[in-house]
Image (cartoon, rainbow, N blue to C red):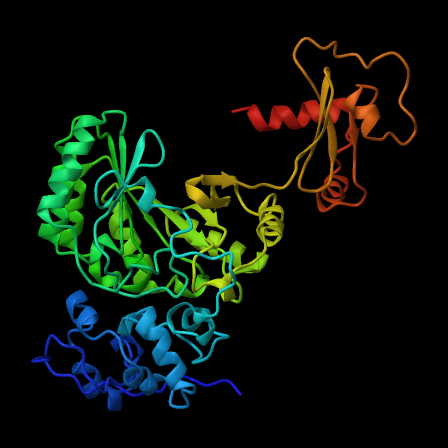
Length: 459
């Protein structure tokens, strides 16, 4: 039987200590208090939209978590997980949970699982070998023209699938001024770096002044053309996107932000509003989804996510294959599953809604795009291509006579006939598109076609 989040409002006051309470109860958003009887309790959450309040009141311990999940079991084992990989869940993100068990995608991404401590030998703490590509502390220089700055080890919510589980939350600290000077000096000495990605941790958990100091330092390097920020704040802490933050960020254009929505359940009204603020400030938004077993390893789920992101003015950018990092084996899917999802998306959603599926290669190999096979065969004169419907088409290469090669195609041509130019196309039978063509009279006479063209273009 599915278990629901306890509908209990925390007994919190305006004078709440900066330390997380030891017996945190499940918190509802004020917008989820519909009746007059509940209104007085909701007024005690007047700080709900204060992002600092959200961070102070994160769920950090099993005692706090038990207020959400009264039947929490295996506490001793879960405590070992938390000691190794810290837990933090903002009250807001907890309010997005619909079922308090691992069948809920938000619950699964935020609540520790005993499986995190069981690792096969193929997993390592740092599979991307970021440490070995770090010429100065905090700066990863892997690609020639790009560098990644690890600005902080803190996140408002620690994703259980994090690729930096080795450092995230173990110490909640930010890069020092001395380290930033080292980064600045390295960038001055390497003008080939034109693009700097600020990551962490989550850089938007830092104060406005700390973020601005970092942006100002990067902008002082003439060769740095573009700054990007990687953040999950719009997803797990949307109230952090304040007017003050946005007004500061837009002073440092060209500035891009990539966020991290993994499931359509995360596209709440608050999350959409946060993204709208950033988009309205002229900040292009992209999204980096991680393919996670039991969360989004379903073509229809990814389709709904991509459609929702486009409506939110967030461009689906990457779908990542889960990294070979310790503590995430229970989230890993096969590469085949990712290819299956990409095959499904093509032809069903607009091109602007289709991300690139990538494997971030071990040993610092970088992102490798993985796609379904659309090139079926090649010859010196023709390339045979396949579309999403299964249609096979012969594409003549430059300099090839448009007339078919000598000889005639068989009644039912195959790939060889297409590759040799003896046939143009192999049409799959009874596709939706071909059925639609028949219904609208696609095979009209030339006179009817001319009439239709005149209709389209006449004033």
